[in-house]
Image (cartoon, rainbow, N blue to C red; front, side, top):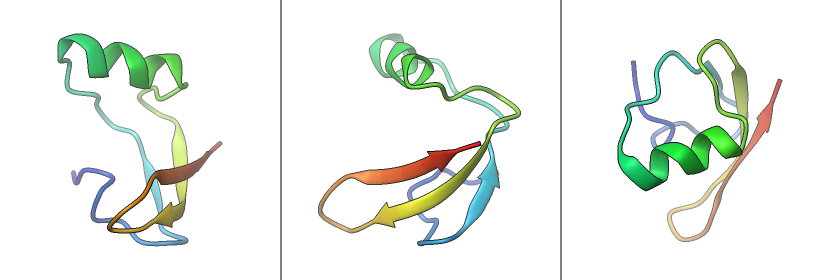
Length: 55
């Protein structure tokens, strides 16, 4: 398992686990991140947002 941060443009990954932590945990769930979902990295710049496509 790896966090999304190191992935590059075009990489695809399956969400296996979301490690709970009060506020950020609720936020990623609100955005649709769930175990079993596939994400594709669209943008991952050092400065700026991490954009993903969720399937």
